[in-house]
Length: 361
Image 1 (cartoon, rainbow, N blue to C red):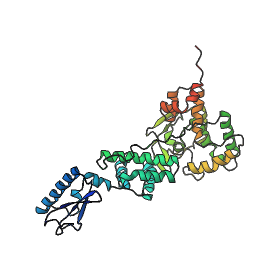
Image 2: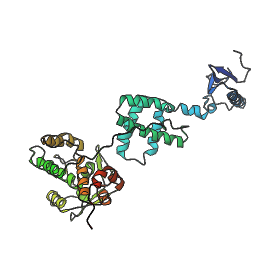
Image 3: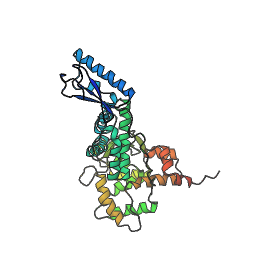
Image 4: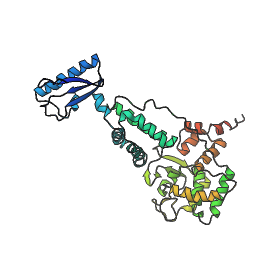
């Protein structure tokens, strides 16, 4: 291989790819700069121009010894790790998301990315690894987050294109509400009342069936969220994994109190009472741990009811919504009470809504 003249940069081809050979006396310790280009006539012209740029910088003492200045934007982006894109995305999203999302959802994605580190443009390799190691649903949720992060990176000029843009959407089986019947609801409440270990939680269970609130909202409820006359409840906070945040919809909502709920709240409110007291504390006076309650109290009590199929505690919410729809309460009003959109109610409970008879004229 012929030496390049003193102070000149030579264009070379190695295995069909172009690179530049730098002068020996340059202040750069590296002798070669890969251009990431195939050896074609057109790319040779680009390489010659790049060589001329380096020679000019050497002449005028503007040479960049790190060589970053002379790499194409694409080359620089290709060296960006997927985890770097994710970290930048999380930093940008911090003002917009809840603490729970940051500490739980985003952290889960981070742990997976660091378990199989790849460059951002090789995200498909990570996808293949992910789908082999985790369930379909976990993989789907992770890829949705990463696809959003890469899309953001494209807009910021950090990536040339979104490597997950054409990720095929896997069909997720549509889940059905599976509510309890009113007879099953009443049997569950009675079973809690008669339980030697878990009767303490009967008011909590009743409230769930009577309001359809999200459990995370109920365990965060304090007396300040209920007016003095016990006529309405304001759901504005939720406790998720020990972190207090706003509701799932990020909007407070007003729930009207009926006679059954009023009697329940009247029996619970101390005289006098502090507005900061929890409405439904645990036996120790702290917030109820929703997961602990579900895995112990709920599972045990329902396990003793042989004629009732075990369903998650969250189904108390579906039971309330179903009961309202079956009794002809307008969809928009039910949605307002439970903090959903009418569209969600329609899509999730279409079968129930269609069974409501047309009223007689």
